[in-house]
Length: 136
Image (cartoon, rainbow, N blue to C red; front, top):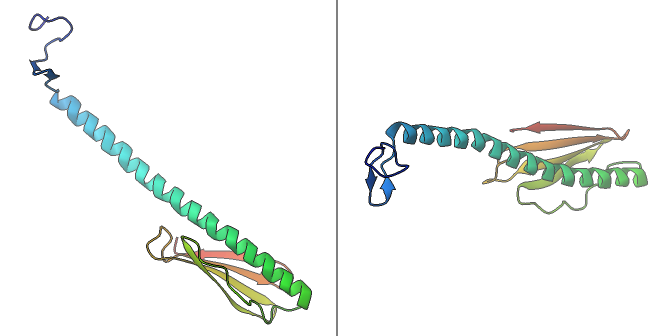
């Protein structure tokens, strides 16, 4: 074989390392770049989805509290008395809550995957709720 050493084929040996085949190195580089480029959007989509779930959980708690207020008093008037604390990705707020409708909002915090996004839950006096999201 090649230079007489067993198992080395036609590759040169220099200081303990084989000289790489340029085509193989280029192919490997392109393969790795493709895998990275395919994985990056999936990673960010998963992060946005997790952040959306975070807002969804807090908005559900807010909806239940607003509905409990309505059932006790027969109106959304005077609600809320406090807003939930912010989470790592969201700030929350109410309003207006009157005339048989209460709006619950989650606003994406700057510097997070959901910066500029908004999720709004519209709760009605008949107990129905609609969810709308913007900026995703």
